[in-house]
Image (cartoon, rainbow, N blue to C red; front, top):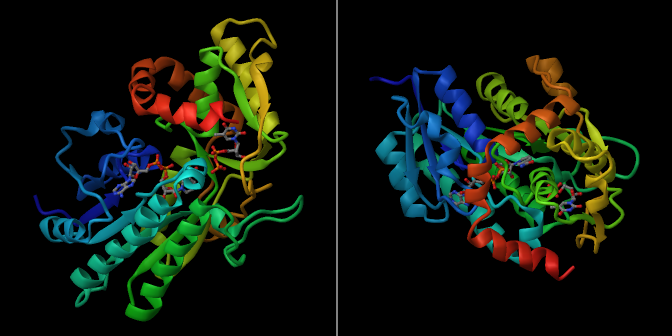
Length: 353
Ligand code: NAD
Ligand code: TYD
């Protein structure tokens, strides 16, 4: 079949990537979606089991740090567009091993940019390089204000520094070589298929197993949470409608202090697990704060809402309940991803605190 577009989605076996791949494969049968992923601890083909037999979907195992392999993928699949999500994504891991974040997030992104520049050089028209980034590049807010698209970058963690660097490279390739790019910077996502090292799935897993809930510092840091499927919908809208060279912030105007969120989660879990009210809250354990812990993130997504008509579809409590239901139902998925290396990671990360 002759496909209208052949889109390389990097990191498609991860949390957000799998939702983006599913949305595009199902919604656009006239596009071919090529999922390029190294399958690190965070990448899991079980996240896309339902698409295995879709005629417009294909998986290729490639490390984006390997420039030659990236070039080969561009050539083999005659890529017309890129949606780049592959990254090392966990702040705590970036504190333990910053270099890995430079390799994948910076060098890996530059390798993709070089391939796009090389293969599209005589025909940039109609192509798109979509770089998926984070609000963490903007740094940390005090009690007031929100991140806008024009907020100066001020990253503090090796993770956010590597993402900021990759954003700068993407813009530099636009300004220097005319690469047709767009960037979006999104707030914290939650939902199904998120690896249980991030706050929400980690705490669901621990509550279920009656394990301590390690709250960093006083639990007063604030994050702005968005349902992952709303992020995927925003990526769809921006991919198709945004002007080349533009940037969009994505977020749901949904700020929560960690400790307040954790208490709501405990209540939902008590109800779902038939436990006495207040039982899960007793698992809360305040531990040493994360180094360089950003106090507050809050994103102003009014440009996206105004220009492209996107808005979040779910209220937070409803999304959180759906997420809890998903983790309690998909025990096999959770058991698979928490066996093996996960145990070693958990011990290193939490027993020393
Ligand atoms: P994730 O860690 O769940 O998935 C990352 C995926 O990238 C995995 O499938 C992994 O195997 C793959 N990958 C890692 N290194 C690779 C390499 N060298 N080569 C090829 N593939 C590699 O991450 P996520 O939470 O789904 O985040 C996806 C993207 O969205 C990232 O770029 C992240 O910075 C950004 N983002 C995430 C959030 C969030 O809350 N999770 C918010 C805003 C932006
Ligand atoms: P996380 O899910 O790691 O996302 P990010 O650091 O990218 O925002 O963490 C969300 C918030 O929860 C952050 O303020 C750190 C805090 N946190 C804990 O208190 N305990 C934990 O075990 C984890 C993983 C996070």
